[in-house]
Image (cartoon, rainbow, N blue to C red; front, side, top):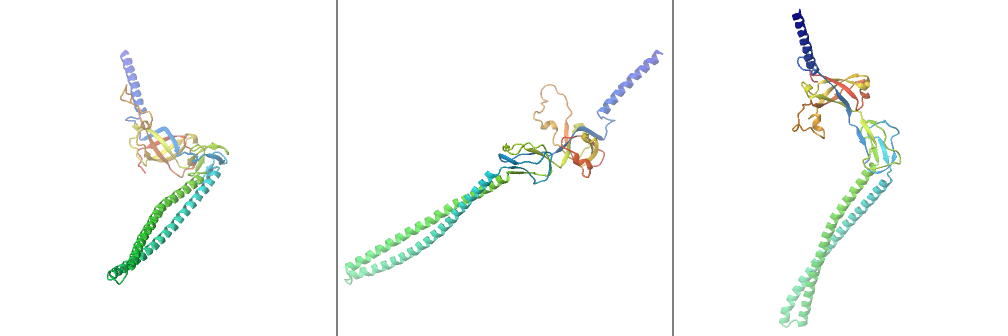
Amino acid sequence: MQKIFRNSATLFILAIGLCGVLFILYAWQLPPFRSSVQMTENAYVRGQVTIISPQLAGYIKQVPERDYLRVKKGDVLFALDDRIYVQKLKQAEAMLETQKASLANSEQDRLAAKARTRSGEAVLNTAKVALNVAEANYNRVTPLRKSGVMTQSNEDQSLSALEQARGAVSQAEAALEVNKQDVQSIIVRRHSLEAAVTNAEAAVDLARIDLSNTKIIAPQDGVLGEIGAKPGQYVNIGAQLTNLVPDKKWIIANFKETQFYGMKAGLPVTFTVDALNHEKMIGHIEAFSPATGSEFSVLKADNATGNFIKVTQRLPVRIAIDGGQEQVERLMPGMSVIVKVDTRVAAE
């Protein structure tokens, strides 16, 4: 009797041990209990929440009529007092007109200098002709004076005329060179004036950009967050005025590395949303993170020192939400979801 009781107790203990081992295998999803359906509660709705900030400092003149307002791309959300920037634009436009006028005057100066150069060339040609005549006359008078036909006075007069003609040619050449240098100087100044016009045009463009930046517009369709500014309030560049939550949303699910076997892009996904009474929705895997979440943390674990404790890592998976579902519009960034992926299903 004692032997039977002893054997029964042994079997009972073995049964309990076996159940414990099976429970551990089931809890860790190890063979033979490995499931093709991978699930995680570490998943949230995400969206590109945009911080709306001014690019200029100034006093706010206009704000949205209320918090959580739906807006469309291009809608004016905030407006700053633009009086200073209107005057800056007028000032820049006036400076541009001044520079353009200076450039136009430079063109007139260049044309006038070219005309003076052509006139100087004509004067030089005339002086050279007169010099040729004076040289011919002198060469004719000198032999005649030696033969007694002409007097010394005649020779002196022809020599004086020759010297005057030579002086006139030298003077005309100098005047022509001065005119040519004037043309070159005007051309050099013109390059400077053209650069000044370009600079003035850039100043006008910058003034227009600043003026347009006094109106802060919605970069995309979405819903505004809480309005953090009031009319008449002074704000600095980059001050957070509100947030814009776009319509496009997705899910980031952080799966354990032991769950990744069989996962690939395109696999269908089912998920439930805690805030919507566990409403069931569908989607598909869109992309995988290039590294585990710990690799993107500021303080990374240093396993080269001290005692090593293995910690299962998690890898973020981006899940696209399929369209045509009634409750999709009610999803908001930050909501918690429970995600399930069946790795046996073929990817779409």
